[in-house]
Image (cartoon, rainbow, N blue to C red):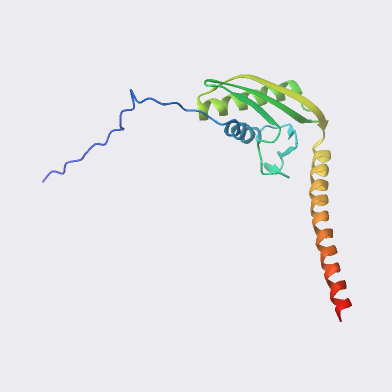
Length: 162
């Protein structure tokens, strides 16, 4: 007895009307994630990227420092960056553009027509890591000293009551 197989085909979508749009934040996230792998890029305006650890440091918001204008078919991008010292910044710029164009096109079909990069600083990896760690330490230190102050105030209050 022969078995019959039903071949399932994709439903046809020709003639179905509608539009596909993207919020600016979606494009910013795509760009932010694509920039994580760019060697020589240390910071995008406050969103610290660590190529050593290959992950974002000090922020979970990859959209920080990325401004976009999103149209129906095109995207324009503005970034402020900190480049790694001794990196060819013109090559870094080309890699940033290549990464952005590729990711945005692959995920959305939109054409990136403009990428403006403003280099605001240059640092060595060591300087960048030290600045990143010291920022984390300062935030952690403030939290710890606040906790200690609150605990100390409560023990002082308890001692006065006795």
